[in-house]
Length: 277
Ligand SMILES: Cc1cc2nc3c(=O)[nH]c(=O)nc-3n(C[C@H](O)[C@H](O)[C@H](O)COP(=O)(O)OP(=O)(O)OC[C@H]3O[C@@H](n4cnc5c(N)ncnc54)[C@H](O)[C@@H]3O)c2cc1C
Image 1 (cartoon, rainbow, N blue to C red):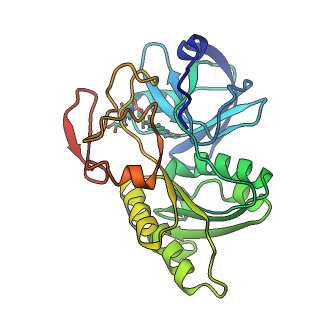
Image 2: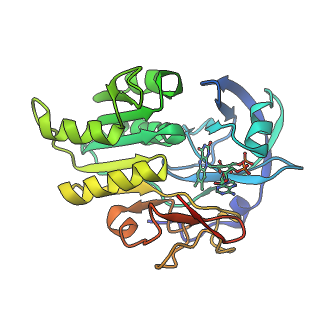
């Protein structure tokens, strides 16, 4: 359930020194900070670079001592962030939003595309502590874009399925296709209790359709343009439900996602203008 009472101190940015920087791929970087915000898997922080912007960023790990984020350098803020070094100061506030929920010992299928591998890793790590069995489906355009594979391989009771669009590593095609194939054709069919997904919206829509068809409950992380992070500005309201994805999301159950008519079709930019997915 969404954390309804967001204390004032989590709404205000505090600055933290970057503790380490890791170049994951050509375009993707991870940064750690020596702080725990008590985040749960699926939640996000608002990251502020003075003089640039404040942007939402999923928590890739929060182990009680350190917090990690993993990001694509695609625009002004994320490119500036990618150029920063150990010791540089970054503003963080949060954690915000809903999180993935499971029961101990469940079998979870985790579907991760792009930087979605980061929050999915956080979910996998925490669920593994609760004795869950994990089938993780990581997909990317090509081999060089796959994220977090060594980290997933270290988790107990975890089977890793890799797919690339061009076939340069693992299954040739989308990770959702590989999940569907595995569900249908596996030597011992997977008895999955829940499907969790984080990644591009088209991938999420395919996961949503699969979850609906197979009646396996799903939880999806939906992203919209977010400014405040705690439900004040209304920028991330979705049609026709009027829920705010910064507080009622980003993680939503599939039955809710399927009532969002803009899901898989369009989203709104910083001025509320419609943009097709
Ligand atoms: C809940 C949530 C979690 C996210 N987690 C991650 C993550 O873990 N790693 C990662 O690389 N990216 C993540 N993003 C996306 C990230 O916030 C944007 O890519 C980032 O804001 C781009 O900023 P920029 O200035 O570098 O690029 P810009 O050139 O400003 O923007 C590029 C694109 O990013 C999106 N974007 C820009 N600002 C925002 C905003 N305030 N809210 C939502 N989308 C925005 C828009 O689609 C825009 O067209 C997340 C977004 C949301 C909503």
